[in-house]
Picture 1 (tube, one colour):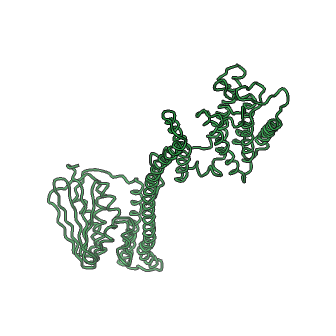
Picture 2: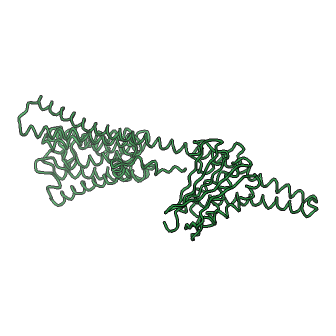
Length: 544
């Protein structure tokens, strides 16, 4: 039995799992796309300043605008991240690290200008709603861009990857807070210092670059636990999405309610907390159900795997026994052949009768070898599907007669009493005469081998409107129920007797060849020492 990955994976597939895998098929492609969007925002802003298109500069008059200096810093940071994503191992030579250092120096200088309260001419400090072409970025904007450049520089050191990703998270959440200020029309959230705000375009670009910083080395640090396709990573993504969306959704609900009905601050806070708890409970319930389903699937897959491993071990043990039996089977005919050859070598077989006797020994044992090798080759052809039948109308009685003729020497040698009961009319099936003869010869030979000398072996054939049943019975060794259940598996027949006198392929061949003819074969035994019977059922030619 072979265990395939598809067999095990099939038990774990589901719509939710597939959706996650599609969403994050290649996390490495996410960062360049995010940087590309940030570049588009910056270039659009520069285009707005050049063409005088107001909506590309600020959402509406009076709100903070994205100034050209900010757009240029965004572009420098973006190109540094792009280079770092393409060549993470040589950041200094490729220019990624120098670009990050340059951005850090420029934003640090801008911060000093705000601390001193003046800027070099012709540049001016930014004033929310009154930005000009030569305005400097606000202190908040400069600080966030400085943090992003610092994070990009830290990504060049493997030991600082987690710290860089933490910087990206901080910048993202601060930018998200600024964006929330625009949505809720709370100027404090996007304008921490009086008249020193961050525009919505700048906020969007910063959020994109912060996410790009997180996904630049998505297979390392804290992102490795989120971007993978393992169950833990999928759960982490769902929890992260819930942590971001639930408070926003709850705040929107409470804010909308407050605009309709007047609430006190305490009531709004309680309502907000209650909404968050309710939404999280719904999400936790869904996750719990998914986890329970995943646990059930994992348990089923584990049980299937253990069963497959057990089957493989059993088959391996059977093959070991088969190899030992095969060596014994090969030695049995080879020993008489070798002995006869030695007799001839040293001048034996002087008389005609002696030479005839030696020839008979060699011929008989050579035939045994040929039969053994033929069984092995037939089994391999059946396993690979390369054994083809020559179908023609066949009288089952003819196949039985040919099989009896083949087995007659073995029956005579062991003194068995053989009897048969065949229909008087032809019993026609569509099949291969040679292979059907092989089926019945194997069953008769099996009965002769496992029946003590002077035993009784019978063959009976009967038919109904659709099929013919051929039963071979004996009063031989029989078998217990455990062995009976696995009797037609390859190599199992080698366990029938303690002396291991069978290669273990005969009954497996009988089953495979019978099934190729569209029939079935069954075995029955009352127990060890109580004989056995085998019944082959084949469809009649007219019934097919």
